[in-house]
Image (cartoon, rainbow, N blue to C red; front, top):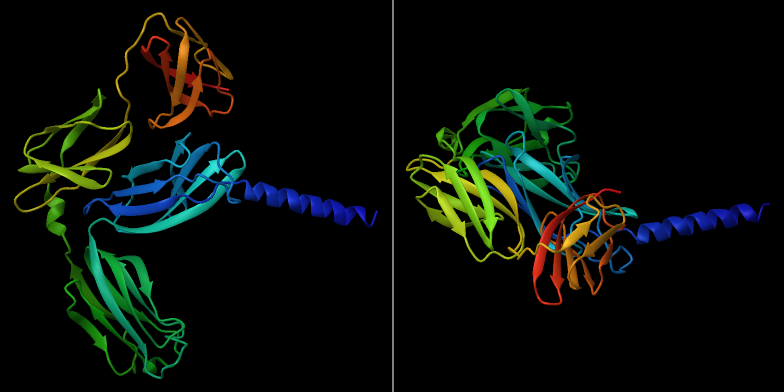
Length: 384
């Protein structure tokens, strides 16, 4: 019995290690790009193609996006190793946000990748912090507390060193700066604060010799004039034959069109055709430009698939399907299945029966090519 218990423990540990090694590696090429001064951020990345152990991945159940430890988006059935993007339009307020991204497979949650983004109408302040005794204890727990419009926003302190500079993104509004002391040798602590124009706002050069409390109030205007602009409204996006059509309403002097985080065109009309688009998932934003300000963008996403010929004598059943899809009619040479992002996830040749048991529940696009070269496209629903 004494020998059996360590053996069983070793087996359990080996099984746990094998399961961990089979989980997805972290997504790569992760970028976070704020969209102007709006409360939006464009995310782009490449899905993992291997497991943690380096073996090829065969399927990803979903990609999960978290913002400040809360899940804001789950993308089902993405293609392995494919580039992807998503525009987050739900940030609650101006500030610095922490994004985490990971893939989930049948083996569980994979490794994470992360990034930060300064979102909204704010600007940067520079802090120079010193311990005049050249002590690595920094400010010994004392700190500067910063509020925006009466609400605590962040704190600034010096830790583990005697000198540091830090640049912090702070929203527009009425700022107050308060020194919070732990009562330990403040006379050897000093700091400088610089505004967004890098002008000196406040300085304690020779140590803090008395209780200073709230020592500075500052009107942080940043780009407040932009808040007065009327954004475009009623954005409608459609796709046909490799072309994306955008229509919206507005009274601006001009409009900047952003695709996947990059401005591609500036026009005066309230409609635009984006031609020669490859199959895939796209995020579009419209920014209204006025003579004296720029509006927040409005954004929407669309999946683009090439327009294919439909042939009436092709029948796909059952729909919804559970484990098997049958195709009747003309002889089939190739079947491709795309997810709802337009990514190819399965290809089969010379068969009229497609096993879909490995696919998660959802809506898919089935593309069927016959021996005569005609192509039929139809939607199918997987519901296990």
